[in-house]
Image 1 (tube, rainbow, N blue to C red):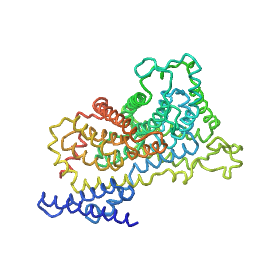
Image 2: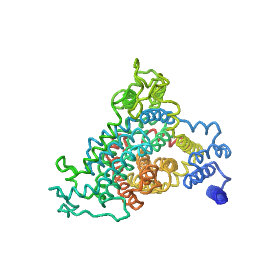
Image 3: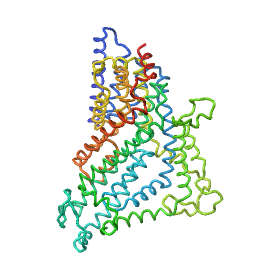
Length: 575
């Protein structure tokens, strides 16, 4: 208890010292009493210190602007409160309703197992299959919940692999003709390298397969979160802060984000799979991609049987799963066709423009899930449960698809408050003029080409996010990068979108993000494995994002020109 007290006292001392330092610096530079810029900078630094040190929960630290801004006269209390609930909050609530229905009725497990069954049981293809299903699920569910859902399925397959390791070794020595090759393409010795006596893995290759499959899931969850604007909280933070700062810019919506990020995810998925295969399974891609069924080992056949048995346990597809699938497809279609850009969207059917957003669709369909019964109409049979079994008698035949408790269990209120805190910080920077002051200090960088500025931003953000939370890192950097872009007369999207994507690449340490911690807790990988593999994935991500922003991102967002909506914002901010 005393240790904790001393810890918090030290944090408060650090905060007080930072306040005094910031205020003194501004007083010296401006030769005036403390101005709003200094007060706003103090609030920003205090919040960042709490976020990085995690002396208090992230959500609690996000409340710091709610009381410091009014006390310092930066924003009124009512103005700060309005920043904590935005359009993206409603968007997230609707998506969580759908995610709750998907998890409640095990539709996610059915999709995962079916995709893995299609991929097959060869180690390389098994990893690719798990990565594909994880990417798909992570597009709609949070990265954390996707990893927490897929890892138990992967662990069951891995345990089956480990338990049949000795039998498979004996079978390989008795059966013919399979000639394995090593990384150079030459014939490898038939003798398998054994692990130490204290190891739980029959062979070293078994251990490598476990490492490869485990890490592939956390990386795939990160990649999948990039694809949709709701895929991860950092995408939502960017979208809301961008729309708040540039209200006249009608360029970021579900469709444009998907068109830009989907090729990035596909390229990253393939390159990450190749990198992990090379690192843990060797370079024998010909054997991995072979479609021959005559060379299956005992282990592969048992793994396929295990996956097939898990799928059979789900039983036939149920009515709630069908309803959830229909809502899933309907939500995606309505998001895509709202304002596709190349043709008029369905919002053009309404007289008043600009009233309907992606959140409108999300909340509408989420609300309907609380109304629609989970039992088939005019059906007298007992309702099927998520696991494929049936209850003796449903106590409530009109029970809805999801309940408020189901929604509450998944709703990340801490993230909602954290995002709101970021909006509040951005609003304070705008009103106080801090963002303009920061932009003026960055004018010496005006000689750098746009791609160099973007690359430096990506590298800096991806390095910081290894040690700090992704949302907190992005919340701190977005106002700075926006001011930098306006000062250098660069389209803000040229720096903001790559930075938003690169902030998700904190994959080198277990503390980088929750999916890393979940995978690490299963005990198959060590920190050295995560650092080695994560460095390659981080490098792949930065390079692919840079490729995207300098090629197909240019015509999609018109990045060659400094847009009018940024000029208007720059003029207004300077006034």
